[in-house]
Length: 153
Image 1 (cartoon, rainbow, N blue to C red):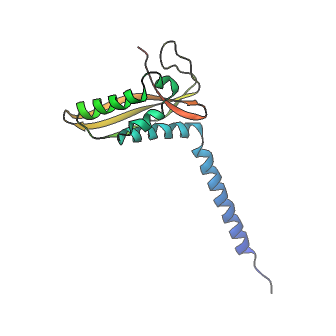
Image 2 (image 1 turned 180 degrees about the vertical axis):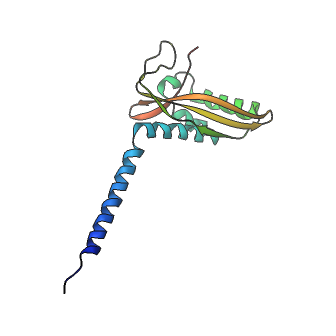
Image 3 (image 1 turned 90 degrees about the vertical axis):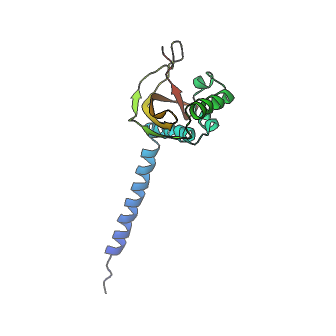
């Protein structure tokens, strides 16, 4: 009797498809743009949960020079939670754009490459519904993507 090889071929082809899908997923999830996008999302998830210490850790060193960790934690909680009377917010992350070079403020070190996205935070508080639109920048520092804000005047 002759054995059919079609089940073996089917299993082999299916295995190749699964391996290819895994490789493509890893490739697309580790692309710089994807990693930059994930960093922005993680930053605002921390902010949304009031974990300002964790969000501060995602700042680029140029941002960390702007304010200490303690000052940032106290200020963010004070302004958003106390003054605006909100406990949390929703946010939408806009499309990511790659910039060849960017500076945080006049005289600061140029960074390259940098990704930029507009984040819209929606708050519901004692002063009603309001939205904060902010361009957020991400640059790689020591192998990690880090958050920056624009301080140009």
